[in-house]
Image (tube, rainbow, N blue to C red; front, side, top):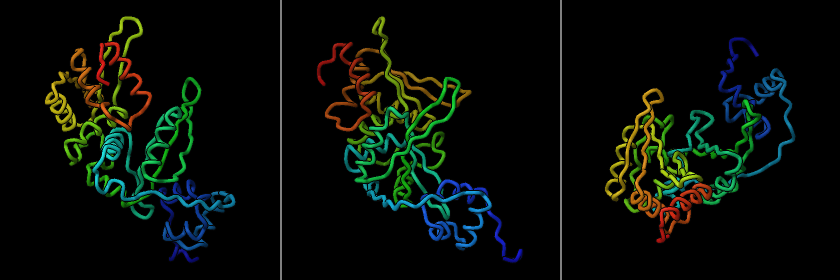
Length: 277
């Protein structure tokens, strides 16, 4: 190939090639990157990447899942993604939704894949920390359509500081909130003195105002704190009546939730004498 026709490889293309070399044929890699087969093969050789035999797995799922948020399940996952998901990519490689959780929460990701009527693989990863390794699981859904629908619902790239509430029906907001708390909330109950509280963390002032108003309109007293250095807000619920009301609001007749957090919520509920759930 002459220097005149040589197209320099970008860092993004090299990263994509390293990550996906074993997932696609050379021809498919070329189509995704807009390069000839010879260009792909030469780059694989120069990077010393030896392709493993390709196992043909076709992933299927409902790309229109978030086109119309009209039920508890969709409202919940929308809130969970608002807290714990992210949209990546664009351009030639397309957009994808990624959700990463601690390895112990793998069942929750399996439930998400099931909600999509999908067979997407949930992958295991780990990285080194002082105490050893942090192990986590991750699902990646490559779909411009699904990501586009999420973006229309205000789930955008780098959303933490700019997140706004999705336009969904009022009866689904409690499910959205439950999903959000499962992603970015905390239930605390002391084993010693039964002291308890519920906390919700948000990055955008808009969501802080939306959640606090929503809680107040349901008779739930809440307090807010601003961590200026982290540019993050915390909503805290302390009094007995408000904690009972919030847990009932979130979990009454609920069918989708993170089991670990529901267990904590119910321990708080019963420690306060709750009996309606």
